[in-house]
Length: 83
Image 1: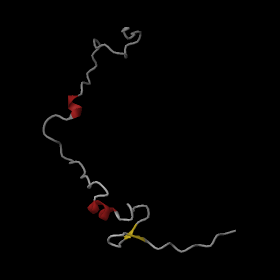
Image 2 (image 1 turned 120 degrees about the horizontal axis):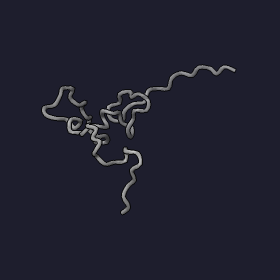
Image 3 (image 1 turned 45 degrees about the vertical axis):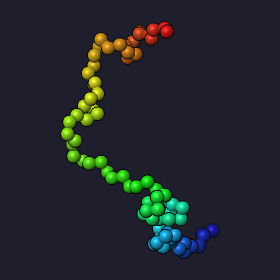
Image 4 (image 1 turned 180 degrees about the horizontal axis):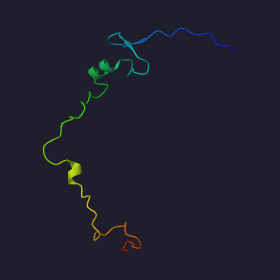
């Protein structure tokens, strides 16, 4: 049996500005922008800058050299000392 096509439900509207809101985007009955203005959501965080910052980055500060004298669990046959 083929089910009949149902009409789309009416759009959900924001409680504050009464603009139609896409489904799943209501925050306590408010649209996203109105919820931010009322303090229900944190302020929008900007995207990070794409330009290179001055000075070294965190990845530059990592020690990526392969030092064979460094102790660690990567050497086979080594065990941790008992405490």
